[in-house]
Length: 337
Image 1 (cartoon, helix red, strand yellow):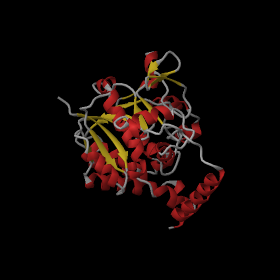
Image 2 (image 1 turned 90 degrees about the vertical axis):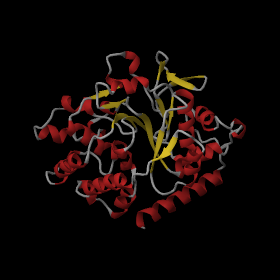
Image 3 (image 1 turned 45 degrees about the vertical axis):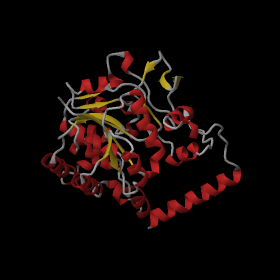
Image 4 (image 1 turned 60 degrees about the vertical axis):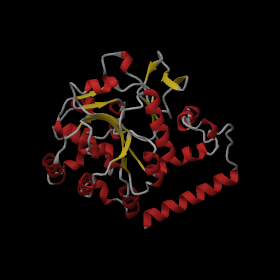
């Protein structure tokens, strides 16, 4: 029997979001399913304390795997045309560690689901695991509908080189915030071969944006040509739903949200494009104008509801101005140093 589990990527910066995700998994999926947290970086004091308090949660500690994927990303991205951008932009983007989510292929779970920490599980993942009987990759996103300039693979370039058509490419496009797959894919030799194609054959130019983990992941799944399924392309209308808190309309029923059209259940509510500091402040009682923030607060304080803010207050103008100044200063420091 396959060993099933859930991965996420986190550190202390997203601590409140991580707690909300873990609580939503316990509430809406299972109290027993194992969850493994891949460390985004070394800021893990609060994360480790939380892990110690939960029997089913562990920390990914395969340092060789982390080093393998970090090295792969750095080797590839330095050859992308975007690497020629300004030093400030290079330092800003390449200091991230989102590529570490690819460590899922080296982990303990035979079959797994990866879910970004800025998400809430809304229903059972059983149908996702079942799909892995017939597919190697499972997704549930709408990136394939985006404009040519905003999708991970450079469609005009691939068409102009007579390599693939847009019809070939679009059904295999996907995000990297939520997916299911299997242990052992992209082992050492395969990854070296793909790296050779990216660097020496200049296939890195297939990637639309520079230093984007989703774009690199799309290349890997596209070139490997393994069977792939996206729920948003399903023949079953019930499978096709939104998931994005910032844009998709949902209906909240007892702190579980459903697709507004037809009240279809969704796999997860994704708070993409909201900065993590918003959720820290929200948990401290600030009205940060995040959609479905009441749902987030419910799961964040599920185990200690007495600590949940009862009244949310908006920040004053002086606070807003000071935060903007500090944000600008930190951005400049990070870019330069």
